[in-house]
Length: 113
Length: 121
Image (cartoon, rainbow over all chains, first blue to last red; front, side, top):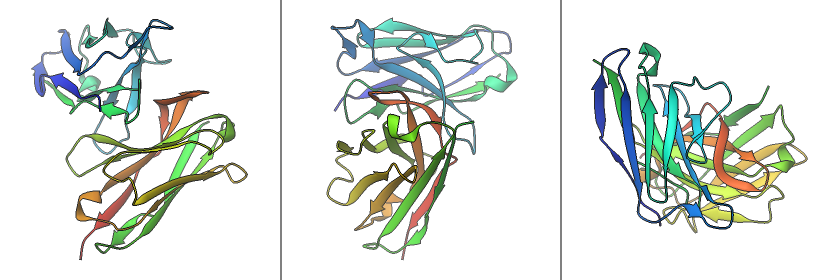
């Protein structure tokens, strides 16, 4: 199984500041035949299902604010929130959909400082 | 508007069974793979099982293989999860999730609101 490891487990960032969450996979999720990274980021708020933010490592889902950005390739990925808003307080998960079992990172809890 | 409405959860005894259902609307259900993802109380997300658009291909996490069965009825726009030999560690909120793209499993753009399954004596 591909193990997804996020860092940090939690962080507190001030409003308007940048937040960065890292995700590392135990093996590459880059599919050579199409040069796509099978990596997604989700946001989950209490009592709600996850919401897709980013897929193919860097493609923003429709309706997601452009302050959310994804980067990385192969085994190392980053979710960046460029200017933190109050509504961004949530738990963020990375997930690989390269192969089954599709695995998630353990989650990163983002709080407002 | 895409909607996924789960039902069938509740309390089961260890060793018992439950069947979850997820009724889909707002999209052509038969064109998309779908999955079940669970979340134990206060814990992270765990992919449980997935099924292809026609129902011919199924996949399971090792933790549920041999105990859970995923299926779908495209004429009823419904996804199922038959859960047998339930254990305390199966206690979780179970989400059904729709694949974002045809012919691609594992990437989910819509999720149900979740259905709580509690396994306890």
